[in-house]
Image 1 (cartoon, rainbow, N blue to C red):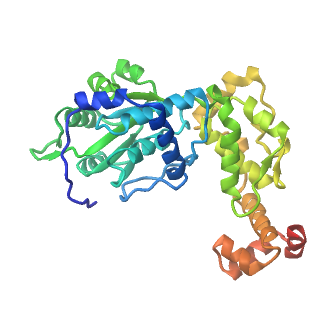
Image 2: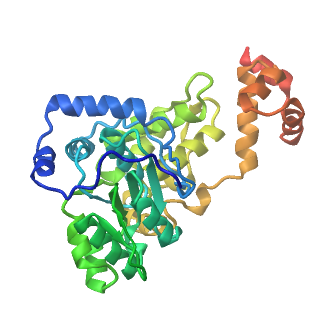
Image 3: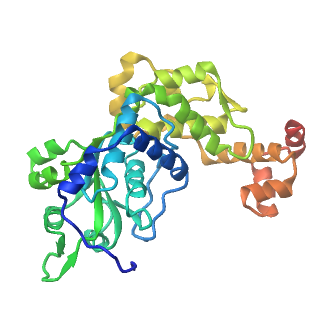
Length: 364
């Protein structure tokens, strides 16, 4: 990976950084919210092939207004313009990569790469190379790194230099580090799988992302934003009052990611209004005394229960039919919307037994 020459070198955190962390007024917070609303709907970008897919990433618009999430935004505003490493913790699916990206885009490094790295799948030598580049490196699930990598990272954060194992070569740490963990880091330290001194170094600036069940007032706006993105070329899908009430009642052990998956599924199944019957079975049948069992099962499956999955063909068929309704049966226009050629569209219509004439009448 190639980087442009940098104009600054790593500076160890000092009093200036600490002063910036302590200052963030109402006007600054309002400005931050506006920047995030404009910037975050676009897919997160990276200029490096080392970036791995952020599976099921919730590309939310940060429409949340709960007190718990406003506190997170305040912390983002305080730490963004510093060089301090940041530790993001919280349950799976709470949007840690999104917050890391928000910190990056609010910082002086906004015009430089934001590199998301899955510590469980990316070779550690590749991660070391990225730390010597400019920009922000997002280390997802830091507890999955080896003891040798943890030692290298601790030394880099303390001295601003990267010493590669088995080599006398030294390079500058030019990237800002943002790390995350879904595990309890203190327990990992107690178990001897994570260095306590690295934990204390990262934990100096820590942001805890609250689970969705602790900010239920954010659910309606999040659900609507997800629905709008799935069916963005026509009138937005709406929610019945009963369906929305179920969404607000459910415990969401998979957090924002699980909510997004549930809404995408419901949009594919609905007729323009999401009703109770369109929601996943686990949401429809949820009762408060199921909370512990549901949380344990869904967390094990990263917030995805088997009954929530629907065949891709069902979603494709519903979507193609909706596009044809939108274009009033015009196949050429529908093909453009779907970004396929006419022959492919014809095969889809035949495969899913779609009646273009009926779609034309429905589109009215």
